[in-house]
Length: 387
Image (cartoon, rainbow, N blue to C red):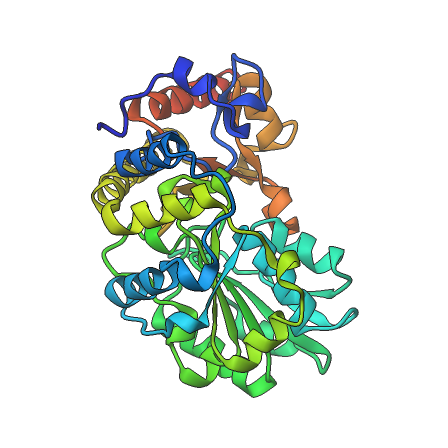
């Protein structure tokens, strides 16, 4: 199957939020869903489950074999060896973030949030009654970087958790071993726990493989809850499937203090989809990554040629372009401007933290034809505005 073999009309018939949130004359490039046709192996696996009426209670987690399959994949793709017994199942990664905060810290204690970042990070801290310790990433020539001096200065005696988004959303940074080692040193020095959202791990666009934070140091691993999923890379977020890796028995016991029904159920279809993705979906994934690289280069070239006032560093991972539109001096937020004048829906940068004001996030996981139309619409809007 050609991953680009899909039309706008077919996309508009999907029931998902991406193509239903806005009127039919708007092209959506906001929420992090891909437009590509789902891998045939996943479609076949789901069809088989439905055909066989396998929609009752799922196989119990210890018996389903997914933990072993997940551990095998981590070793093969990332060189990270874990015990299958250290793997747990969540409905999704965001649920794991909330549960991690609720068990690794107490109300009023601090959690480090490195903005701009995926909005549920800040929401989870606030909604669980924890105290956000903001340590913004710093824009640099090679992409956003961690300010380690600022981080040390802002961690106080009641800071308990470091929340890490790696690869980073929305900036697309994939932190280097050196950066992760420097972060690990602070974690050990200040005795922090780490909640590491690595849902975009399979979407590295550069040649180097993803390096899990917990793989950097055994002592750090013991303090880290790593959250991953097949959902982002294989475009199956609606099936509710997320995985956690406990770096130590102590972490497992802390999270298992919450009853397992609160930690999430078992989705028969989600488990079937993950198994199909990890056993026979990597050919599809490589085709997707190749298209994402081409789309990334298309955007980089377009920004350099047509939008010199917009600052953009091509992402090292993910399918998200983080565009600094502040120099355009638009009469309204860039998200609102492009929605009204280009009929293109982007994510508003300020949703990712105050450092994102004046920025937009563009989801480029779409077909070349749709991406070209998005860029052309934005071009026309800027020309008409004199930008």
